[in-house]
Length: 457
Image (cartoon, rainbow, N blue to C red; front, top):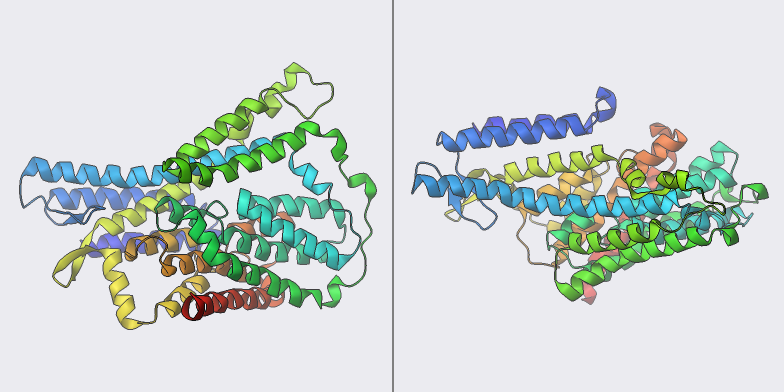
């Protein structure tokens, strides 16, 4: 029966990775996989087929001990995992809503109005630096969408624009890797107390900068980025007239950055700080609007309800499905290590460590895999596989590799998929033109991380 549960996970995982060929939203197999795995786990537990292990290492089997106690233990196991997943989902919903409120109030237009250079190389570096910094605050996906929207106002030639858009994917993924709020995977590790905000930034900032700078330096020497572009000045936003937009931009970004500070001061989970930040931004949004002659009948266009309606709920449900599926696999007792019964993922981790004793190689391979397979389940699985203490270098290297490795393929990250959809970037074109640049940046950052870890720290 254990094989059936693992088979369900493998089939669901393959369905997620084959989302585009199957033309099936990855949320569907994720939810099916999670619900069926937990149903099988529950039936197997109550029939005495499975033993389960909770988040504290306690083993429960219906055939041993008090029946009520064992059933209560299984219910507690489910509540434990759904609680951990809910922390991540509430955090993401809050962050997404703040970002949408900024966008509704035309806050990102302020950033667009700042870019007025005609030099192709200057534009390349300006958009890259903005993407690197912005993704650390509002996440790599949103930063990519904002900057590609900006490029559409600046560059009419699509053949030139897709080069900029593709390199922005590299910059935003690198920027998101060193921030606890810059990528879903770093947020997962932070909320699970695998990394701290300060530790993540301290360990990954230099590798992330190299991951961004190396591809951009190499691209700067290409012919495509020589010369100037023609800019239509009418496309620029008159930022001096957008006082409310500026207010919402800086308030929203400040509110998101405040969350790690709130956690450090109060020691409360990050989602509590995100709830506070959302409440403040929501409050302010009720009284300011990006129109000189505001009509109250248009208030709904800038409301938080409108922002909430624009959130990708399918993405939230995907995270729910994949994280609960991984939790089911983590909870199933599969074997024993040194006489101690452990869950499936922990057992798999020991097997991999025996086959590849060098953990650095394992994590670099994880980064390469994240270009093919969604990095969320990869990181979720690694969190269940390893038991290193908080801020161990392994967690930081996992955060770097999973966050930046996806840049090597256009389908390897949420930012890449967004760019692919917005600019219709061809998979093969990206593979030929951009993959080698992304690989060079990824390896430069990885080698820098290993050098600092083994020879400096």
